[in-house]
Length: 312
Ligand code: BMA
View 1 (cartoon, rainbow, N blue to C red):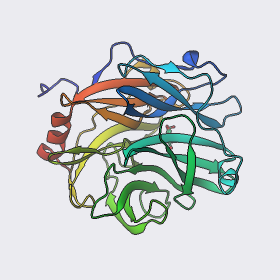
View 2 (view 1 turned 120 degrees about the vertical axis):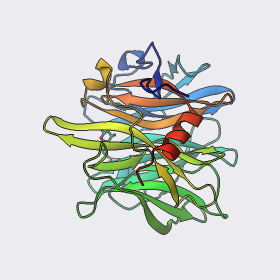
View 3 (view 1 turned 180 degrees about the vertical axis):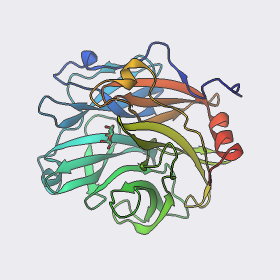
View 4 (view 1 turned 30 degrees about the vertical axis):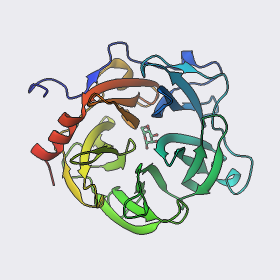
């Protein structure tokens, strides 16, 4: 257990672990990366802004989850085949990776003049990819897939944009990864709380004995702009639409200089975490939309935070 004043996530002392200077093609940022273990290596798919302000996704590999080497070419750039090309024209952003049924499923935001949609692609070995489907209409972001079917259906969390009701986390189900429905709202921002402006899914949910652990982001608006922080929630294993507890406290806020200032200041934004066999979890986050960072926590501490001090 962490002591009362110890941070629940221990930042790696050599953060940031990846910056634009590690990328062998011209980019201005390296951030919001999905990360997964693949054949005992770590694969990181990271977002970069190009100098035209649009984003692409690169791939970096590591033996220890801390030291990454970037491949010479980007991994995902806007599609040139329809129906994807029309919706990816302005760039691809914020990938999440989910290992299921022997394949890696990647979801990312696609921007175009029609708004932002989410694309699902598959890969077996991170060499080439197959675009499967556009799995949302306009104005959805942050789709994370659960790594197992529940009651024989695929499950995802996402975050629709809405000016009418708060920007909340929703759950949806699918028989085939293409058609999604039976949607329900599961976590709303809380008034006068660190996530009162909006919440959105972060990493692919992690299965624990007490529930699915959901690492999400929450935003608070101040006179000096918005602050992005990370929080945790626990969802029922058999019915993930049931939230067992949302921790009252955030688990990470911008503190290091590269989180406080950068392309967008005061941002920690998570798209990936890797649960290890020893009960720890490596949590990866973009700092200030500029660099990639990592920290470690005990999964049991994160679960306990949801159960011992819930806000629901
Ligand atoms: C969100 C997304 C993220 C970004 C964050 C902070 O709306 O655009 O990709 O990290 O804002 O700028």
